[in-house]
Amino acid sequence: MNALINSICALVCICSQLCARILGSVCMRRGYHLWLAAVVSVTPFLQGLGNPRSIFSNSNNFFNVKFVHCSCGWTFLLLSGFVLLVSLVPTRRPLLCLMHLTRLGITTTLCQCIPYLFQLLEDLTGSCHQPMPPGTLFLPRLETRQTCQAEGHQWQGYHISRQTFTLTLCSLSLAEELSVFVRYLRRGYPAGTSLRLVFLLNASLLGLYNLLLMCIALYTQEYTQSVVGAAMGTLFWHITYRGWYRTYYSPGPPGHGMFPRFAGVRNKLE
Image 1 (cartoon, rainbow, N blue to C red):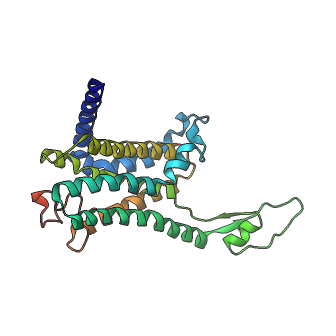
Image 2: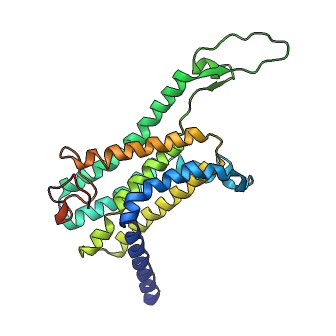
Image 3: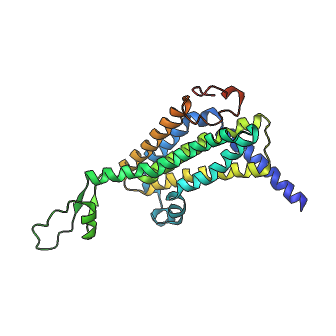
């Protein structure tokens, strides 16, 4: 039994080391957003290769319901545990740990609030589309979404994909936060099996988000809406992680206060 446990711990250690090196690499940190842009932009042109009987062709499939629609919650739940452990263990400073957790709260707020702006845009640019019964020459115009849907008709406006927005923003945030683990290990900070498992769970969630984003881009018919949604997610990631968090009046970038080279320096890359 002990041999089995030791083997599992060794496997967890090896996998976490490998994932930490990949997520902490310069290529990953500088080019991951380009990869997501390529997935959303290029994958739709491969729709002929998709299987129409696949589970992902149904928008109400298990993964969309349990992960895409709740991606903000999953990201905050798993990532907050990782950020809490890697920031509190080496520093023993609860206030600094709270500041790191603030970034996750901001990301979650953006994921929840920005889609309401998308819906407002759809309301402002939309119109009611009504089926024309045989022999009907004119149907009265319905002015609002509520009136239109109450009559059983369809409201059509400029729709920005909430799914690609949240998956893109959550994926970029996960990649940024998890990138500090390789430096954490190199500093020789305590890294038990529990911490490594939490890290691997977050890395697995990141991989799942990439897969789901690819499937959504492959099976959706709304190309421009998906591209704009991903672009908006990238924009808010750039404003926060590549802009605001590197200024003095901010929660600070991932790793701030944990490593000597970050002490007092928020506006520079590693």
